[in-house]
Image (cartoon, rainbow, N blue to C red):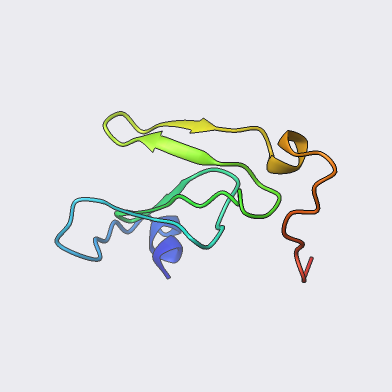
Length: 81
């Protein structure tokens, strides 16, 4: 829903907070902003990378993809591809 507002050029704010940063569920390969909510999880728990952001200037720093950092480790396997 939030992303749909942004695609249509409608700027909405979900809460009284200026910005909200969430993770836990991988959303994109890079952090993504939908309205005033930043989706920060880039899949380090699976086959993505670990990302962090300087919230003052929005500069993003990301690791290499996790499988390349830990070759041969099965890690978590996606059940659905």
